[in-house]
Length: 149
Figure 1 (cartoon, rainbow, N blue to C red):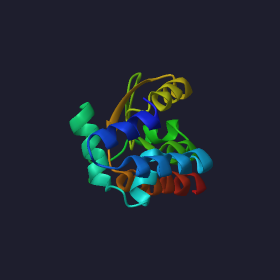
Figure 2: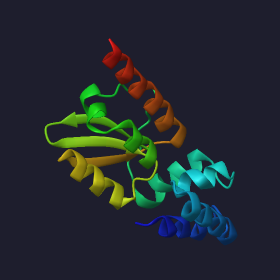
Figure 3: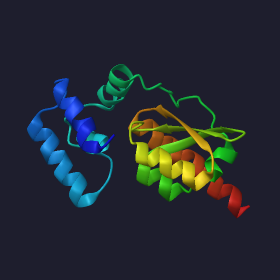
Figure 4: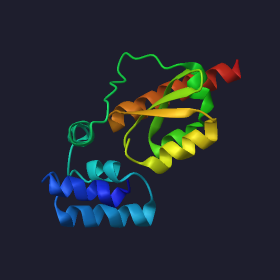
């Protein structure tokens, strides 16, 4: 699903307006990034509304990252720059299955890229943007500390 289609879904549900979507899509086109995060940064909806939309409208499973310990081996599978760019966090790896938490679980291109990058099947959960960003800071920070020792 594309950013535009996700945005149109938010408009249909009355969460944002067409003009808000148009402005956010223009920012996404100019600067890149994740449409949902742009909409949140513009103040057009809250992280909770965005995450709730994915859960309620599309049945995406929700994974609260607070008090959840990530698997260090999973973290090592995806570079920090990739995690930040696509707003995702590798959570766990069991065999050939990689679990990720992401801000936009409907972006199939991202899941396909992660599958190709890691050679694993990917299971996506949705989480809030701020929870993902905090976890990226924490876990990749710990990874860097461990490499310096």
